[in-house]
Image 1 (cartoon, rainbow, N blue to C red):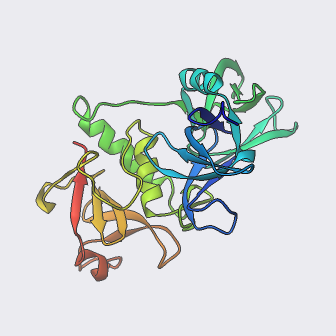
Image 2 (spheres, rainbow, N blue to C red; image 1 turned 90 degrees about the vertical axis):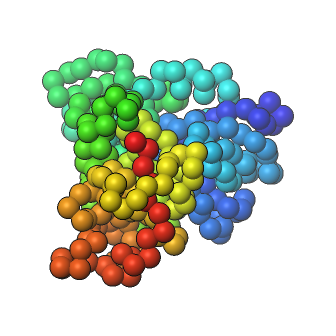
Length: 274
């Protein structure tokens, strides 16, 4: 596999576990989603490779999840400009439900649009070259809104994206509607809106600047020891919490029924990209 080391690959599975160790019993470090491109750093053995994501995360991925080849990956990166925004999507062989599914995608999966439309359906192209159909409203072109040029629009879209995961079960290392953790929720919310932030619950200067609580606005992030949430306005924040096991909204206001004193009293930072 010498040609694959230090090369690139495309993730071809609906959800790709990125593990801390090269075995199936390992703790999950992160998840990759369909259509994402990763860098191959080294081959661990005949089954596993050590990879780096486009947001600087590292871990082990089983080779069965990958389409190897730097040329194909670079071409895919240039062409794949659409992202799935519906929670869970069947890609149908024909533009109708009375067909059969050729793939299962989740919000955050990256695909190519052929621009061919039939009624309420749009044809998409998968990394293997296969073509299928999904509803037009299930996909959109990836947006890249400048925080400086249109701050209000980006803040509104960040909140909308975060709230679209409401009720999703908590999953350690997860970042899809099948299961998501606190930093997965925040990082995917930003990624869906064309902004890359650090994937863990850590406020890093190269991604965000720390602000005072009085400066906090919707779309900014609240950091706690080992936890992160998104502020959505009116004293409330959305987060994926293991305590309740799902994505929900809580409050910073003691007068609200959904107030969580344990979190309100342990804020260690507030991060913004604006």
